[in-house]
Image (tube, rainbow, N blue to C red):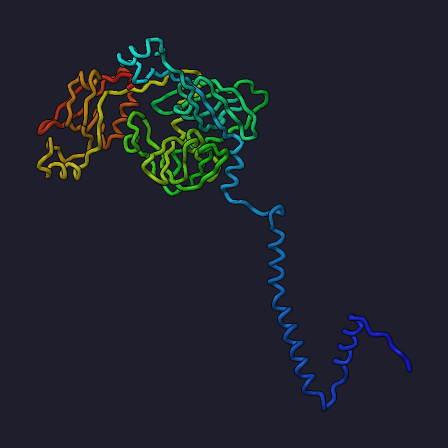
Length: 409
């Protein structure tokens, strides 16, 4: 008796297929028909899945590292990220002694008068952001980030640090320029855009170092434009802000607000503590108009007349006039209402009064408070302005000469 070796898996499969493909006889025709039907279904399914398999192969070819595209945010940050810096500051604050016992005669009689009442010096540290606008090491940031600082240290994205010198500060526009010391090689420079071209709803990308977390990026949109400093809650500034819902936190101040193309359209600055998800930025065109003068260390002049005001519309006037407790009846016109006349100012010397409604300056209609501020700012220093005023039922002309804004006010 011959013993045949057991066929391998491959030979066994071939043997079984050979048996299946034997000529069909009448007795086995039904079973073979079922087998042929299953093979036909399998072939059809394979042909149907070929396009899907090809698509999967194409998707694999686009995997990361093999040509995959990134979002516009990643591309914008790639262009600007290396130009964004962290700014650390220190300043000395002298505080008087506030121990309540030192001024008590009983305490001095009991313990003697050998206790010192000299002022105490404290070192305050601050942090903000900025970005490079010149390859030689010129940084643009906010005035409140570096103002009154004794030392300024600037850290680049790669970790290299430089000592900084504050070249120029303008508190009214909240802008400042810092010069880096010891720059040996050209530094990357951020591309400045045109803030006059942005629209509500455009993308906004905030880059900076919030709460000590370096190189943080947040995304939002432009929520509104021309938001006045009075509306924002900082009336001592002379700005119209860009409002955005991109997250801006402490430490972001001075960092860039980018367009989707990676151009700087604003400088992140103001944060309202009583609002969530609202941030503000100085339009970059305002910074472009002042940066060269700040680099040269020049003082920025800001003409003013010395009134606090609010916008008036016919609807607002009607609501006021219907109120029996209203202090004054207002004309139902467009303009601005003088809420207060500051003492020892051009407006006080010219005779402007609280409750006056300013409707025009030098014949140009005044439509709102921001518009009036712009007219005065553009007039220049020591320029006489003819202001049209509605006072009760009379209209009169009052001449006011502009002066330089007192930055300490």
